[in-house]
Length: 401
Image 1 (cartoon, one colour):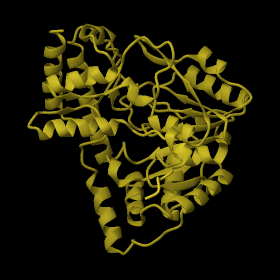
Image 2 (image 1 turned 30 degrees about the vertical axis):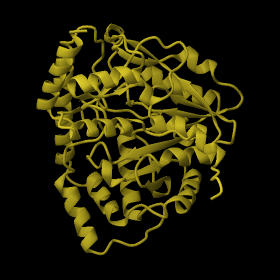
Image 3 (image 1 turned 90 degrees about the horizontal axis):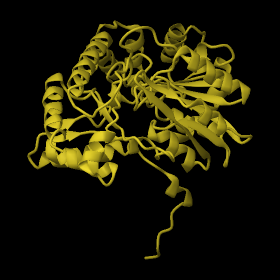
């Protein structure tokens, strides 16, 4: 058999390495060990019953065939109204393209605007698919970094602007950010908007965690003057409604751009699941008690985790007001372990305690000059009881180093 040759661009294709951590933890559990899963941003809380019932009804009503690539009109109208109201702007159905999850918005955005060699600014640490899709499609990845203080994380503005040149075309902005749990101040968001307009950048606003807010009201960059016209919103039902495996989301942006997204969707996936879209309508327009209960449970888990982590010496972190992640600085503990690498640190901890987490390296390539070590705790898929037990085991192990 002749040797198989593959596309050269495949060498630039990354992945979500958090799933590899999940496999590692599963194998450890299958050997009879207890595992405390802080690694994956999945949700072990049930989808609200009213959403499930409306989806079942749509199935029985034979809503099972193909639909337009941009989604059923009823859901597009509901998304436009809800997203616009929450962000203080106006959208209509022509501004909405339904997607099989939020993730497909990323490659569609990049393939719509980016030519080979164009620069794309994106957060690092950040969701790893940004970096993967930029490099896979021949772009120049421009990772912007964060500064950590007792008040949380903020964008390193000088580093950010110094990377911009004539070939920089796009900006990925993830307020309410995975993995760091950070959010922009009004001043920082206004600065981002000014930069986008100064350098004529198209913006992807990843708003997956927009509604995972434990106090106050969320804000979108599209609400700022001049930004709605140059911004595509990534929206997903996964987080707010515990619908991660349902794969339902949307792109919201200028009508001319959404026509391109719809065409790309026809090529990529034909359409988003028909009957699930009726569940999406119920999620947004129906009773919100289920979503509020999910948020309250996540808040309790956050508070439980923060309280337990505060008992561990050598750990520094800020408590996020959004997302379901804590991103502590573990430099002191890392050095005490004499770990050879992040992977060494992660594996040693898993095998000694059963506590499974992701490290900073699972969220983009490390930036030159980084000295501090960080890990991510996701509290969306673990009960309060297991948070307490797992972190106690972690404290017992790390305190002996």
